[in-house]
Image (cartoon, rainbow, N blue to C red; front, top):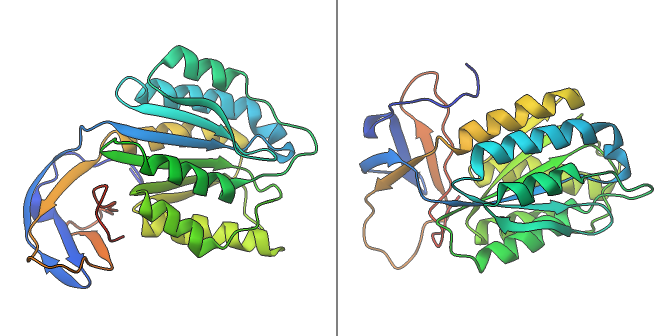
Length: 255
């Protein structure tokens, strides 16, 4: 089905290029290394109707991933606020999700949160890192340049996976920068951008993302010795009907 993980891929199914030059795939295996997963949750006033589905969706997401990975939950209302720091403790994570509520008369600070979380991830040592904004289309209060925000995610070696309830607006500069980060930032970091039309779609949407994150592959390829790292690393599929995205190993450059 569309968007579902594909089992049994082998080296012949992957195409890796660096600055347009194809590289030899040496080996492919299931990625089993632990992830740091930062979930950025919209708890601004605009998310009021979405909160019940958001709680349920987060609990399912936590249940699927917490046993093997470290998850943090960050609220976005007025300023980025850590609701629970990185942990595998499902009780703590479920409790934070259950206490989630929308703050009246508040706006969202998504881009600030992405930059702050990216900075924190750079200091952590997990092999893989993922940033997951789960937002509505409320007002964005952050005044940041979108390219700078994407740069922070890339420097952290993280993949950006966004889930948005509704169609984002472009009425203000802040909203245009936010939309650009979620569109280009997800593509450039090997993530994805999912638009949901209703709040009730949050539960299956977060379940699907959990399946995708837990079904990643590790691709090892050869490259010539060089002091200059590539500007752009791309992963694509040699198998018809299969879409691939790639995030470089942490500490590597590329996109």
